[in-house]
Amino acid sequence: MIHRTLPLLAITAALAATSAAAQESPFQTRACPVPAALQGYPVWARAADGTALDSAWTRSVADAVARRWEPPSRRRASFPGLSRLRERVQPPEPRWPDDWAPSASHVARVEVTLRRGGRPGEAAVTAPSGDRAFDRTLPELFREGAPGSPDLPALPAGLDSVRLVVGFGVAPEEGAGAVRFAAQQSPLQVVPGTLTVNRPSTAPPAGPPLPVTVKYDVDAAGRVLPGSIQVLEGSDRSMTTAVQAGLLRARFTPAQSNCRAVTLSAVQQFGGR
Image (cartoon, rainbow, N blue to C red; front, side, top):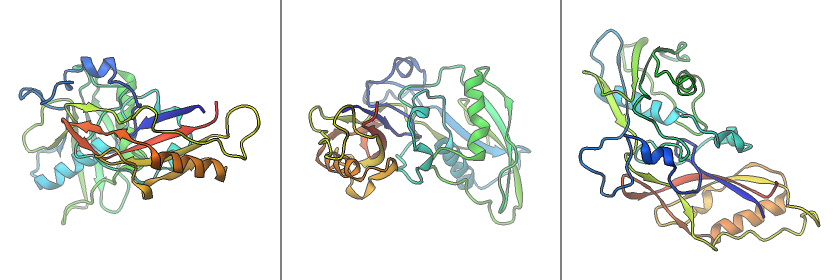
């Protein structure tokens, strides 16, 4: 049986060793414990005109921005049904795709107006990084955001709109609320030999079974949470039942963020070519 797997961080990664790009990133390390001098990639938000805003609110904006953001990832587009995902586990820190990590040049600033009861205004990249693929991902997070990501927080009381500067990869400025991506992360991995899916009786006599794409959550102990399995694509009930049974039997090496095991969502395609 052919299967493809995409563990989610911001809905982006692969069950595989840490990528070469991640190993070379100045914002990440493979070492545990994380060296004291290493800080994760920052995302921050402050009022564009310098007005003092509630620090808890600006930090909540930064956190939502980081989790709504879909950094460049070639693997993401290869999973049918991913857009149907409506909820997923949010780990303690935002995580990178396992097939991409930022370099020292991936710094940018975006300005956007948030409005009470309405959609954000058009976001403008005011200080681009120079990497067009990277820069294109920034305004999009204010339009739709990654599947299963949180909404932007409501405006504080007394404000009908606010113009924000949002920084990516550059040290937080005075008055900004900030979050940082995990400085160390390792992907969710299947314990070899534990994830088996029995071929359903309805499968065609030759060739792979019809494809099924599912989302599921794996806890910090390496077990699939039973109620978390969600079919994103596929109509073969027998195949779906076989996949669910196989996942509940499987064991995983849990994902790590900042050197501790974390619960994480995954999307995986079974069957198909």
